[in-house]
Length: 494
Image 1: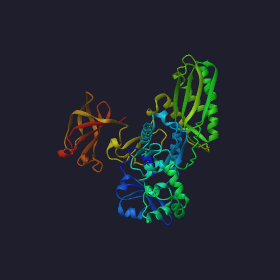
Image 2 (image 1 turned 45 degrees about the vertical axis):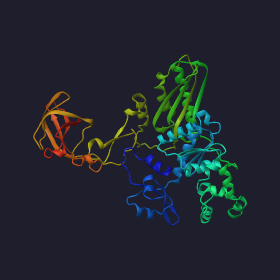
Image 3 (image 1 turned 135 degrees about the horizontal axis):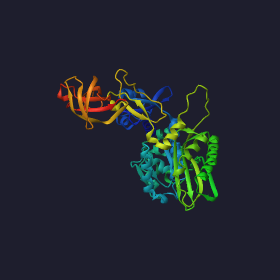
Image 4 (image 1 turned 90 degrees about the vertical axis):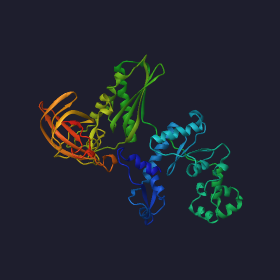
């Protein structure tokens, strides 16, 4: 499921529900299913199945190419996060698993059950489904996590053999050839192998089967190479005497930014989020978080952003140390700059976001929708619009849409297609001197059954004071099923 959930995470949040999703990969001269979503599995599609057969079984499949390297990169990032948050001994168990040695760490996090629940909650917020098994040995945990019945399995110490006895022989990681030979003999469960003499098993199937049995039951150790977490680029500055003035803090920030940029350059990274930890002499730490619209390692730009936030720092009785770290960084390679290139707006966006807040900066993008309030979405300030159609040029839209549309009262209009001659909005009477319309917009019945007969008639009007409004009437003015003839102000023109 990891490959499917990675694709779902990358999809826009406002994307409509998709068809059953599968990924395909080449297997010799044919394409086979690499991964399938729950909906596709419920329809009988399983990994390893020929793609042509799956297409014949289910029409309209959403087929994406498999990306094993992308899946491995996601597992590596999760392992790195686990090594920082839960235990330093973590490793990727490819293609879709994670190995953690929580010996001596579980009790620090409330015990094994609470640790497993915390892991599930954390990964669920990232859109990932988890199955967790905790056992004395890696072999038992590996099999229970993938073939066990429970989403969370905690095996008491020394009871690995009983826990894995009901699992299929595939849980031993013995390879397809040995599995097939065992199946031909009618051996399907690990418990059946544990009841057999070891010497005949070794003679007939080799030492691999015996070694895997020992690893699954804890009789033999299985070395796993733990991941070494990548170090967060950071710069430290400790003072011989506590500082408290804004000038001293600004002077220290200059050196911190230069040192951090040097580390980022050596690693080929650019900072997307900074954390300035202000360590005071009373033992408290005041964190200061800054985000950038685009990865950067421009020391001058970083200094400007930090200088603008110095006034928010409370030095207390004095600052003992400052630590500047890039808690979020991205690969950043050198780029060619030409004389005709457009100016880079990222520094301006960062400075405005520092003053106004990140939520205050965004750009509009068109969405393919007939309903006006659904035809616009917000994107980050520097994001490029993706998809969508431009707004109709012959029916200009107002620069400001009201959300939700506000009701207009005391409307005088000639049915069914007459523009309003007068209306009251926000306790003020507006007399219309000119109007265009109607522009009829039907409900999107393919999205909501309640909009099957809904109709809106929109008018652009100008009152005697020169203000221009965008109004609509709910209903076509003839059929009561299309609307109740209520009027609303939906937007205001400049």
